[in-house]
Image 1: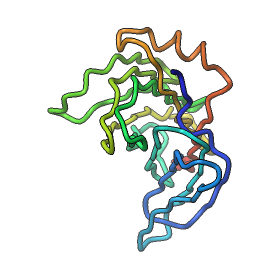
Image 2: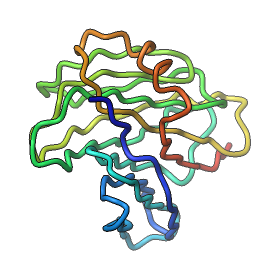
Image 3: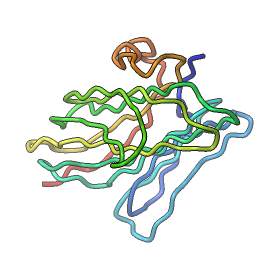
Length: 190
């Protein structure tokens, strides 16, 4: 079985100290928006709702980033099924304003991921998630020193019935435009 991770269908923005995007796996009939809260108004948060996705993706991001610095995004995948999922394909991409993109797992974790590291995107194939469990990763992007305007990040993926040794580039080609991307937007400062 191959199922996309949450294709966003709605968007809600709130002022927060750290931004967060969420794609939820609730069925269309029970769709609900998820939100985060904080005391500062220096960042933005958005919540998106998806239809029939077995895995929810949550992305925390900074509202402002500095040109020439590394920006970190916290990405959490949550199993919404009552059983273990198949393997998970995760894609992170930045269309412009970055010189290097990586996905890191927390030190000491037991994840056995297979990831690619490229200039503007990082792709991973991860083992399936147990019922009610989650994976947390850190996507890092080196912002170009000459970058101006906004930095857009896109996070998405699919649940796939494949080996974790599968080349993630093949999966990106297979799913192509059908992935529902969760989009983040940060203002680039100098």
